[in-house]
Length: 313
Image 1 (cartoon, rainbow, N blue to C red):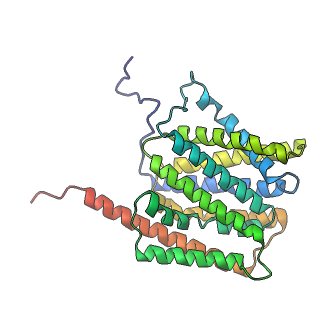
Image 2 (cartoon, rainbow, N blue to C red):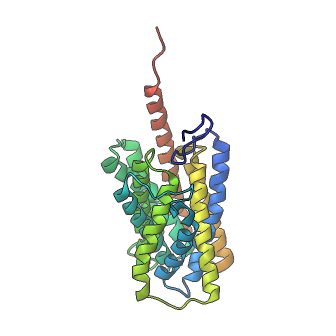
Image 3 (cartoon, rainbow, N blue to C red):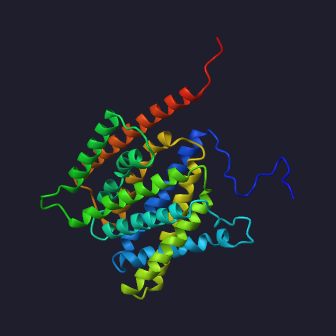
């Protein structure tokens, strides 16, 4: 039976709308959910291993995505054109989550979060090799500034350095890989498909790892683990919605509001006050990210201008 003119096939992504204010509002909302997920993960890391926390998180994620795995469901989303990329992306997402949770066990939440925001710098470098993008001198300089910020936060070679500081850095790299793979599949795969595969891949791998570190969770642990799964999934989904209404270059500056949330939660829950070096380093990282977003907007505007047909003489 053919679709009527007013109906959209289930496998077609919703049309994108240019409503930047709505996109910004959604991104700010997502930062509350994601910040809550990070703070809860740090709280739970005192009683459960990182792998088990991630396992509970992905279990909740998988349960939420079950409607997309039922063949008879209108949301069915397991048909993919890029299975290898989907599986690889799922592994990258899992690596990013697991490494970040591992870092939270040992680091102040503001320090771990500030370091993890270096991911746009990794995206800049990886886009050259995997997306064929050209990166100019100014973006490379912005990347260098961001890396300087990371060094200021981590302070390697000093008594303030903790080896666990590498966890959020590698987590940021894994997240950058995840973003690059998402870009490669954009226009080919629905968001529902990508999220369904991410939940399956992450949970399957964690099921193989968790028996080696298993600690019997209390009802208290399960409650907070469920909160992590719900808030992280909601946060990711709201981010996807935000990108339907505004360009990445418009939204990028507002993503850093999450640093304020996690710093506030770190102070209220754990009594953590970021030192001056964490604040200065975070400033370098944020400034680098903002400039990178600005250059991305300039590059996008030039591409749009070149794509537009020239006026008739």
